[in-house]
Structures are given as structure tokens and as C-alpha cells.
Length: 156
Image (cartoon, rainbow, N blue to C red; front, side):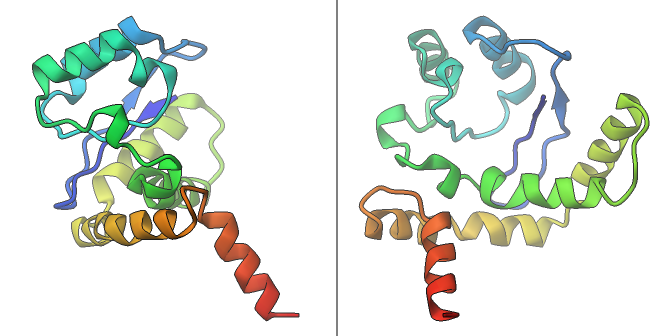
């Protein structure tokens, strides 16, 4: 598993790789937040390790400007630039070549993180508000499938 963090200015934190098979619980997540992510402003999703009381207490104490879970969008994958943009871009680029080893894949991921264009990342983050508005228009539901349905209905 890989942790990625991007900023609205287009900055990309180097990827953080978790050990294979590691279940990220609250203690592990807080350790990574403390030692890897702390300099970055952080938007969480609804993963249990992210929403736990211990994690929220740590965030409040160490990142006072973080968004608390009651402010997160209900369909946060639709509103998280990592989900609607970044991971797909990294996956497409790293999959252009076969990787016979985990080290090869990791090196490709590190390279793509480093090569991500700042203006492209900033533009994707800039779509956040529009995507929030789309979630509101969808009464809190998911928006990706809704758009696919609309596109398909026009092509009858």
C-alpha cells in the first residue's frame, strides 16, 4: 500500500510505502502522520484508522487546521483529488511497463510522483469545489457513476 499526499499548489509529497500485508490501524496511521505527513495539510477519508478518536485527537493537537470528519463530504472518493485524479494518473503511467519485482514497481511510482507536473496537480485540486457542488446536487450520493449513466443515456 502507498500513501500519497498532494497540495492545492501542486506539490507532491514523496510516496510512503507500507510493508506488504501491513494492516494500517490507528497506531500505525498516527505514527505515519507524525513522522511523514505532519508538514502537509491533510484531507482524510472515512477509513476507520482515519476516523478513530485517537487519530482525530492527534490531528487536532498537531494539525489544528485539518478538516474534522463532520466536514468531510459523504462520498469523499468523489471529492478527494488523490482518488479522482492522482492515483489513476500514477497507475496509468506506471503500468506502461511491466514490473517483474516490487522494487521495480516502487521505483516507477517514486518516479511518477517526482515527475507529476505541479500545474496539472493544482488544476485537479482546483476541481474540488465543483465536485463538492456535484455531490450536493446528487443529494450526497456518488457522482462518478451518475455521469457515466448520463453519458450513456445520451448515446441511445
